[in-house]
Amino acid sequence: MATRRDSNDRENVLIDATLTCIAREGISAATVRKIADYAGVTNGLIRFYFKSKDGIIQAAYRRFLERLFEAAHGAIEARRELTPQERLRHYLLANLSPPIVTPESVLLWANFLPLAHQDAAMAEIRELWYERTTHAFRELIHEALRAQGREPDEVELRRLAVAVNGLIDGLWIEGALSAERLEIRELQAIGLDAASRLLGLTLGEPA
Amino acid sequence: MATRRDSNDRENVLIDATLTCIAREGISAATVRKIADYAGVTNGLIRFYFKSKDGIIQAAYRRFLERLFEAAHGAIEARRELTPQERLRHYLLANLSPPIVTPESVLLWANFLPLAHQDAAMAEIRELWYERTTHAFRELIHEALRAQGREPDEVELRRLAVAVNGLIDGLWIEGALSAERLEIRELQAIGLDAASRLLGLTLGEPA
DNA sequence: CTTGTTTTTATGCAGTTGCATAAACTATGC
DNA sequence: GCATAGTTTATGCAACTGCATAAAAACAAG
Image 1 (cartoon, chains in turn cyan, brown, orange, green):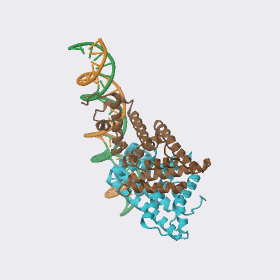
Image 2 (image 1 turned 90 degrees about the horizontal axis):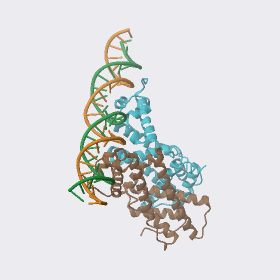
Image 3 (image 1 turned 90 degrees about the vertical axis):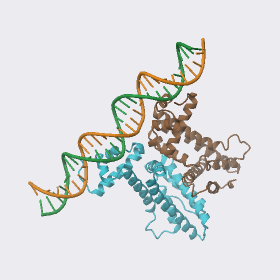
Image 4 (image 1 turned 135 degrees about the vertical axis):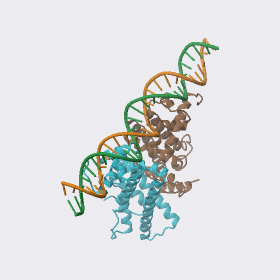
């Protein structure tokens, strides 16, 4: 029998087990019994900490998006000494590095996406983090351009943000799914160079 | 009782039912009984046309990738009158139009992706079409640059292909999942403009 | 140690799953 | 028309699903 633990800890273990299970075996295989196995616990325990299976899936989705977001923002937050251009550069690099660029993260994203399209609660979670991410991209690009004396109008800024966001997302997937064919360093070089051309900036090369 | 039909026709109906079912309700809900419902037949029939459930899922994956590929290539094949640059332009536009840019296609892609990562047979199917797609991108870019008197070395060409491929994939997902926020026409304008900047070409605007 | 509360397991249930089999039906050649 | 081969359905089964409940175990306070 699993030794008794702090509630919060148990909850985290169960959420992590859910994410591991989904990443490894897919959402179809993520049953309450299998999630409990991954956590080293019996299946009834999940219902003690979560209202239903949907509950733990939603919690796992929240945790997953939160981690993606923090992995990107950890690279620039509390670093006020960076120039706007450097901030953008660091942000792009973080989005083209592990733990964001890993098969696990792309697989989790792909597994959750259909749920977020059918289930209202999942859609709401998705919406929240989508807003935050696109807003962050927009602001970083805006500041970087402004620092160069360029003040893009709203339409132009929106277009640039969509293009750079799309580019990074596409490279993220490409890099994560074909790690053998594409080194992280080269992925970053391609991403920085492409973003530089799209924005008319010089973002340099990976360190 | 469903009236008797030509074998090939029945098979197509079952495959289409599978794709519709997965796109609408997700891979987890795609049981043999539900697929049979979508096709308007009883569940036993699936086992008559396919060895197992995996069999019909694989056939559906093949059909799906085949359609994506043909939707893109239909725009340029048997059109030898186009210049290399126009061919690239048409190819990019097709990749940023329905039926490629639709929620259904992105959802199908997301639902199949985890399977292609676990199951060897599914991985093989994915590999085949991945090769074809990336090769096509490479060739189109290569020809377009050559027509401008530029002969990129292998590394440069590879990098450009990865960047443009990533860009288009990212815009594909972005456009399909937020159709309310992003008109197809604007998506195409963003894509053509971004590809132009990445390649140093002038690909124009959507018609 | 005993009492009481919180956490964990054990067990069971109704519904669903993929798959197998035999029966019923439909078309076609003679 | 009628026998034969090719399709489709009907039915059943063992395994698994999410969820409910009660019993058991772990812990904290006295």
